Image (cartoon, rainbow, N blue to C red; front, side):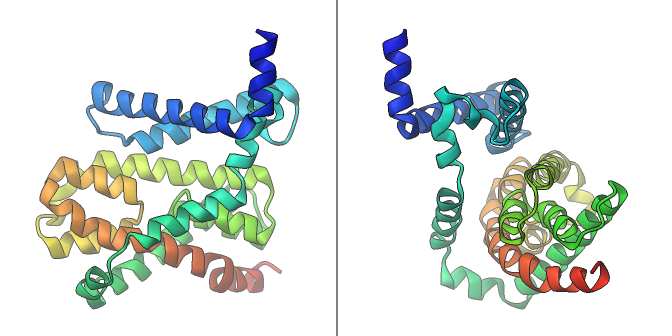
Length: 253
């Protein structure tokens, strides 16, 4: 057993890939077999990750969560800024210029409305939780956009790890809510055409939540909702730590 632990500690990054892969696999099984795809596997995996991070920090009293345990030290590198930014860029590379042009003004307007709306909601939540500094308010507001925009913004602004965790949790709750309530509200809001799906994807923004929700509503609408939802993250990462932060800094110097 000691030999096995020594091998794992010396190959921490490889073990981290294996561990995260198993976590994602289990999350996907739970999503499809138990929850009937009502909640996407990515959201379940993030939820498990938050629990494991808290558990690791509780055991060690450290600041890196599960990565403070020698056995899981590679997770700290795997979850670092380099791999995070690489994942974001890799997602954007799969986008089609033709589809961007096709979404046109409808997609652009829905993106702006969605980002501004959820950012304001996130900032109001942060104010209710007692935060008053611009960096924390902006990070949690960005997290309300998506659970990717939150940590990217927090890292850029130097927000604390607690605030970044709150931003991820806020985005995760949004993803689950969008997944569950999309098929329930589809008829009432007229979500039955490619145009409405593009507008919905732009306003909601969370790619996994929109895709899962539209799949439960009408699988034919998924590509259209994914078009605008894909660019929501990129636009959020651009606006939140720059324009929105400057505005908040003026209000909360």
